Length: 580
Image 1 (tube, rainbow, N blue to C red):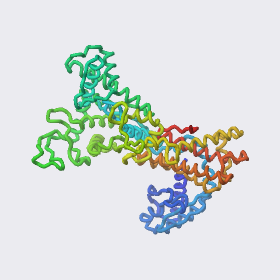
Image 2 (cartoon, rainbow, N blue to C red):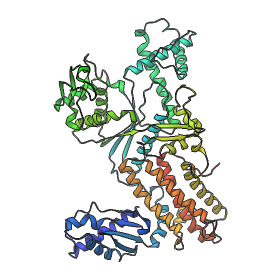
Image 3 (cartoon, one colour):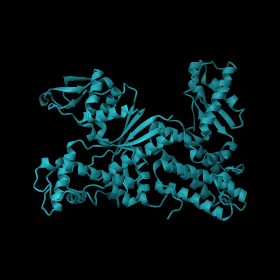
Image 4 (tube, rainbow, N blue to C red):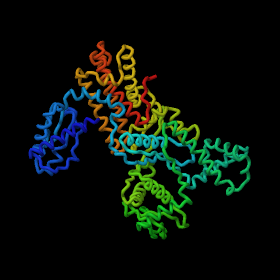
C-alpha cells in the first residue's frame, strides 16, 4: 500500500477523463507524471507535475491543463482541495479521513507495509568488505560492511533478488607476506627470538595463528627453506584470518551469502577465458600507451604491452592486462572475477569500495560493459573515511594492531546497533565523524538513541494499555475508529507514515540506505513531538480514560512502531522495547 501511488493513479484517471472529453489528446506519455510532497508543506499534502510535463506534448498551456485536472480531482472524496499555483503546479490537500484511515491500513499490512515489487525480482550482486585476509578489519572496513549490508537489505525489501558477496583477495603477493609473518610467529612460538622486517605484519593478532601452526605441524618447518613451507603456511594463514574476519562480521550482524576466492581464478583457465571473451570482441591488442598525466616524456619508457581497449567502453585510457614478464596485472583477475559474476546471470552488479579505489571505477565499469555487451550495469560505491574522536581528540589507538581501531574494537566499545546506525547517518561518499562519547549519550542529539527511544516509548504505552485491559493486538487496533484524530500533530505523524513506501523506493533507486536513517530520525521527531504535546494537552495523550479513545490513539502509535521497526530492520539495528 502506497498512498502516493494511490493519488498518482487518481491523477492518471483525471488525465484519462480529460482525454475522453477531448480536453487532452490521446497517446500522451504519462510515465513522467509524479505525486510527491510539496517543497513547502503549507502548500498542501501532495503536489503533481502532471500539467507541466504534459503541456508540450499536448500543445497546451500548463495552467489550463492544471485547471482541468483540478476540476476532476475535486470530485473525489479523498481530495479536500486542488489548487493551481504558478505556471501550472497542482497542489493537493487530502481529506482528514485519508490520514485517519492510514494507521489501520498499516496495521492490516503489518510488516508488508512499505515493501514493494519495485525491483521486479531482478538479480543483484552486492560485493562489499572484500578486505585482504592479512589482518583484522578496521573501522574503514566497518563502514563499508555496514553500508553494503544495509544496501543489500534495502534492495531486498524493495523487491530485488539480492546476493551478498565477499571477494577474498588471496591471490596476490600480500598473502605471501602474511605467510612469512605467520612463520615468524611460528618460530616465536617455538621460543626463537624474531624480528619483523619492514613490510611484514608485526601485529600481535598473528600470535595465536603462529601458535596454532605450531600445534598443527610441530617443528616440521624449523630451519626449513621457504619453498618447503610457504604454500602451506599461506593457505593455513589465510584460512585462519578468514575465520577472524567472519567472526568480526558476525559481531556486526553481517552474514554473507557467498565468499569468492581470488586464488580460484589462477591456474584454472578462468582468467584466460575472460580475456579470450574480450579478445573475441576485438578489445585485446598489443600497443604502447602514452605517458600518464604529469609524467614527462623523458621520464617515461614506452614499451609494447598487452592492453584492454577500455576506451571503447567509456574509460579515459586503455589498460594493461599483462606484464612484460608474461604474468597478469592486478586488473586481469578483477576482470575474470566480474566475468564470473556476469556469467552467473546477475542483472545488476554493485561493488562497495574504499575511497582510495576512485581510479578503479572507470576501468572496471568498462570491463563489465564489454564483458556483458552493455547489458549488465555495474555501480561502484566509494566509501569515504571515518574520523574517530574520543574526549574531544582524534582517537587512533588499537588494542591489538597498535596503529588503528579494529572493527572488533569498535563493536566492543559501542555495540553493533550504535555502530551500524551512526555509520548510516551520512551519505557514504561523505567523510564521517565518529565520536565515541556522543554516539552513546542518551539525548536527542544522538540519532540512534532518539529513534530507539521512540520505539521504546511506544512499547511502554502498549504495555500500560494491556495492563488496563485494552486489546492492543494489531488486528484489534486496525479496526479502531480514528475519526477523532484531528489535531495537526496527529495528522502530521500520519502524513509522515505515508511517506515510508515512497521513501523506500527512492532509497532503492538511488542506492542510498542513509535515506532510511534520515527518515527514521524525522519520524521519531514527530512521535516525540506528539508525546510532549500530550504533557500540556491531555486529549493528545496515548492513554485515555475511555478504552475506545485509547485504542484509537494507540493505533497511530503502533503503526509508527511498525514503520520504525521495518526501517531499523533494513539498517540492521534492533528496535528495542525498553531503554536501560
